Length: 107
Image (cartoon, rainbow, N blue to C red; front, side):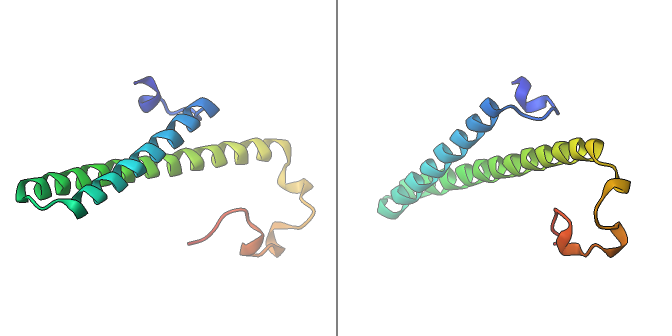
């Protein structure tokens, strides 16, 4: 439970757990779709619709969590690199840099 409420950068073990959860959820979603495709009873069809919606929401949450953790890791790496290199030591002045030279996208 602690890992869901902490705001620190996750360790490799937590990343592997998240990736494992994403893979299991993806498999559960595929299973729900297959069950829905093969169901003929109206009650079973309703059951699979609810199951697909629930699993889709979990899958969406896990993907957002992975993206959030990835952004936190990149922010941490950026802060570490800024501490090591000051702007005065940059080989190219910031004024002459284009957007393509920055390590992030502008979309």
